[in-house]
Length: 586
Image (cartoon, rainbow, N blue to C red; front, side):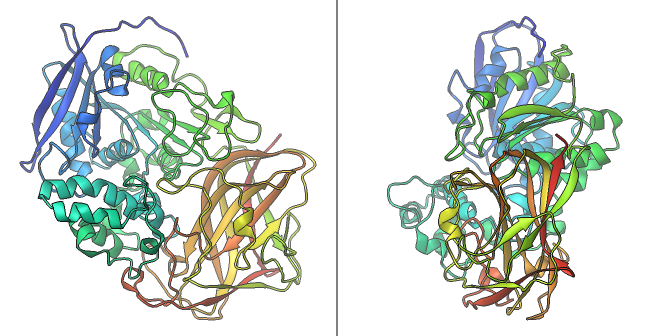
C-alpha cells in the first residue's frame, strides 16, 4: 500500500441519535465524530448486539473517527435502544437504505457515505446491496465475514440442509434482549435449560436439544425469543422468500465499489466469493464491476479485525505469513473511495487469497482463477470403502466395472461434526480420523503425492447414489492427509436429496433408483505438499453442523419419526463418482 500522512483527531461521541424509518419506527445510533470543524465522510455500521458495547477507544468505531470519519453505530430494528420488532435479515434491506441516507445528511457529514462491519454487521451491508436502486449517497462498502445468500449459508446450506449447530444457539443468544424487552423474566430463566453447563449463551446446546424432534418444537421460550425462527424453518426450500436478500439475485443493481473479505474456514465462506463474482459478472454499472475486490484469509469466522492475528483456526496456526492489518486495509479502501486519496488499494489484481499448505498470500486476476483446470479425482474400491480401514482409493484414473459401496445411515446416530465451518460449535482445523473410524463414513484416499498440487477455486463432488428412503442426505468432505496421518479438514458440504434437481422445488426419491447428486463444497486455496494424500469422505450426516435428515420424506421441521436408510454409492464407468478439483499450474 502507498503510505500517506494521516491526520488524527480527538473524538466526540453523540449518544442515542434518533432516526425515523420510512414506516415510522425510530432507530437509535451512537455517532463518533472528529473533534474538529468541518464536515467528513460518514461510515455506517448497523448491528443487533447493542451499540453501547462499542465503547472501546481502541475499537474500529473510534478508529475511523480518529482518522477523519463520522462513524455511525446503529442498533437494528427491535434491538436494544431501537424501536420495533426484530425480523433478522429482511428488515435490514429498507432500514439500511434509510440509515445510509439519514447518516449522509447529519450535520457533520459531507454527504459521502460508506458501510463497514463484520458478521451480522456484514449481513446488514449485503442487505443494503439488495435495494434497487442503492442509496444515492452510498459510495463504497466493505462487508466482512458475512453471508450474501441467506439460504445458502445463514439459515440453510447450499445443499438445502439447515445449519443446525449454530442456528438455534445463535437465536437463543440474541433472544435474551428480545425477552428482556418483553419483560419475560420467567423465560429468561428457562434459557439455562438449553445451554451446556459452564458455557455462555450462543455456545453449544445440550446434546438432547440438538437431537430433539420435531426441530420446530422448542417450547414457549424460543417462540417468544426468536419468533422468526419458525418462519425460516417453514421455508426450507429456496425461493422468493429468500431472494429478497440474496445479493446474487440483485447483482445487476449494485452500483458501488465493494471490498469483500472472508476466510476459508468461515461459517459464511460462500458469501464474499459469490457476491464478488456475481457483481463482477452482472452489475449494470461498468465502474462497479471493475471496482470489486476480494480478500480470502485462512481464519475461521471472527477473523482478525481489530488486531493482526494468524490463529483462531482450530489445531493449526498458519504462522506469521497469515498476519494481516485488516483495519488498515479497510482505512485505505475508504480513504481511496471517500476521500479521493491514492492509497494503492486499487493497484494490482483484484483478488487476494491466502494459500494454505505453502502458507503464502497471492494475487489473482479474478475469481475463480481464470488459469485453473478442473480435474476429476475418481472414487475407487472393491466395495469395502467403509471407514479409515477400508479399501477406498482416489485417483485421476476413471473407474471401470467396480462394485458399489454401501452403508446404513441412522438419523438417531449421525456422524458427528469435527471442526470445520462452524461458529458456536468448535471450529476450524480438527483431525478427522475419529469420525473416519465409523462404518457409515466412506473414505477414499489417494496415494502420497510426489509433487505439490495447488487447488484454488470452487470444489464440487459429483456423486451417483441410491437410497432405500424417499429422502435422505449425502455429505462430502475434502481432507489433506499429512505424512504422519493427521487428517486436516479443508471443506465440507451436503445435499438434501429432495433438492437434487432444484433448490426451490423438492422431489422425493424413488427408493433404489440411482440418481446423480452435486455436492457444493464451496471453495478453498491450498497446496497438497509432496508426501501428503488427498482424501474424500462420503457419508449422510455431519451433525449438528447440519440437521439430521429423518429420511421419511415428510416436512423435516415438524417430523417426529425417523427411518434408517441403506445408501449405495456407485463408482463405475457409467457412474463415475468423483471430486472436481480446481488445479492451478505450477
